[in-house]
Image (cartoon, rainbow, N blue to C red; front, side):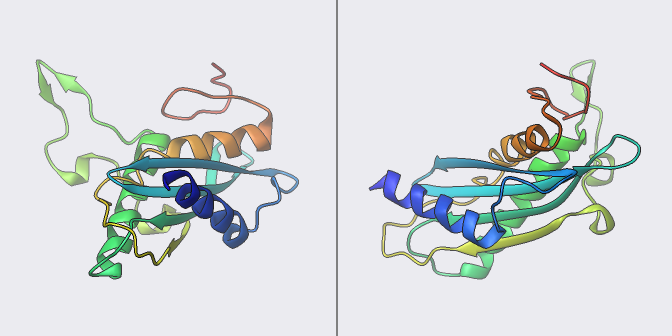
Length: 169
């Protein structure tokens, strides 16, 4: 049953991530997503620095994609999806000029670099269910998990990307 698998991801991510709703000066947020026969739950921890900038401290993800051949490739796909989602959250996008994308190469996409990447923890649920896809499953829950953590930390509900403090929707 899809809901049981997703619920297992949610309960596991809260246990692994140490869910407590957020500490003083920071916040935690949850989000979940299902597609391609797979399920993911994500927990983000954030704080606001002295310059009133959003800082993502950790992202924990739990994935149930059914039977797998190579769990390490699944982990890599999930980690890559988290980084793409994080880039969108923090403003790493490309514009369009005269119908063509402005960014022509990866270096122009403003993807997170290792020094600015939060701690990422990924747990893969071992399952006998039919195999599901993992190619992009981790991208959609990144922004809502971080937005929920930002709400927990500041009381501001932000609903537009990139997430900016003071940009209340």
